[in-house]
Structures are given as C-alpha cells and as structure tokens.
Amino acid sequence: MRPAGRTRAPRGQGEALRAEILDAAEALLVETQSEEAVSIRAVANRVGVTAPSIYRHFEDKASLMFAVCHRQFGRLEVELRAEVAGESDPVEAVLACGRAYIRFGLEHPETYRIMFMGHWELTPEEYRHEMHSGAFLALVETVQAVADAGRLRPGVDVMGAALSLWTHVHGLVSLRIAKPSFPWPDLDDHVEAECRAIAAALFT
Image (cartoon, rainbow, N blue to C red; front, side, top):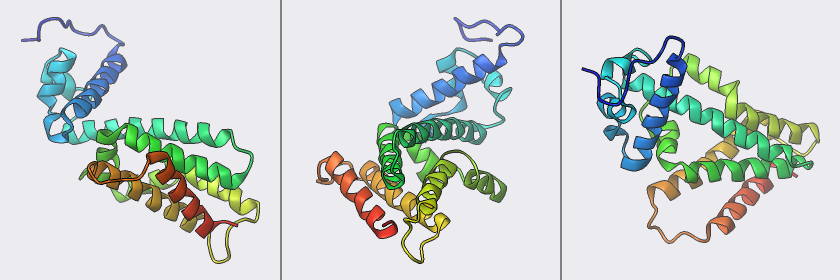
C-alpha cells in the first residue's frame, strides 16, 4: 500500500524522484546526525513512497549512500573551482582552495563523515576515477599552476603536494567534527594559520 499523500510518478519523472530520495537522505543525515538512522524505510517515509520505489533507483542502502557522496563531491568541486577562479596568484589560489574545503566540511559535517570518515569503501577502480576527476582534480590542477609558475619547493612534486594539502585540511576538518568540545582557537584564525603553514612547507 502506497503511503498517503504520494501518487505514482508520471512516466519520465524518475530523475525527479531520484533527486527527492537523495534530498531526503541528506536531510535525515543532518537531522539524526547518524548514518545508521538513514534506513531505506526512513527515506521512503520522508519522500512519501514505498520502499520498493527506493529500490528502483538504489539497490541497497550502500548504493544510496554512495550516491549521496557523489552528489556532495560534485558540490565540493563547484565550490573549490569558484574560489580558485578569483585568485591570480597561484599560491593564494591554493590557500583559497584549502579554505573552501574546510568551510565545506564544517558546514556539512554529517555528509562529510560519510564522504571521508565512514565505512563506505570505494573499489580500486572508483579510487582511480576519484584521482582523475572532481574535487581532487580541482586541487591537483591548482597545485599544477603553482608548479608551472616555478614555485614548488625542491623535491616536491605536484601529486605529493596535493596529497599533503588534502591530508592537512582533512585533519583539521575531521578533528573539529570529531571533537567539537575541544577548546579550539577561533576558526578563521585556525584555518588561516594551518593553510599558511602547509603552503610555506610546499611552496616558495
């Protein structure tokens, strides 16, 4: 029996329903602060459809969580590229990229947990795809611009620098999410100090 308030979607509107499902899953993550609470049944109830309607788009909870992550990675890429576009100095562009990453993670803590701190592991093929597309590619391209300007420190290569930057900003985000009661310094000051520190270690 279909839940009240929802009729079968007209032919051709499957993508709209898929987007509603993803919206509902993200909303539940934020509200419950727990990926365990985001069940297929809970998402179906939020959207107003039956569980089988969810399964027509996602074969299980893991595939739904992967889709949530994929959409968030797309949003992260858009934010990183937007920040970089406003900087003419390549090192400042990297700093802008780092700030944008940290801001995104702290503004979306529950989806960030799924993206980077959860147990939804990628396959080797999926990792190769992530390394050559999306948000990570935006970071690599930003570091490449620094290399093209001759401002990488001796012994530092583009991929190594990109991985160091990612490790550094992820550490800040994950610790602030995991330990919110720790007496952290002012967020803006903390972000600026950490971004400048890693940039000084990698760039001239």
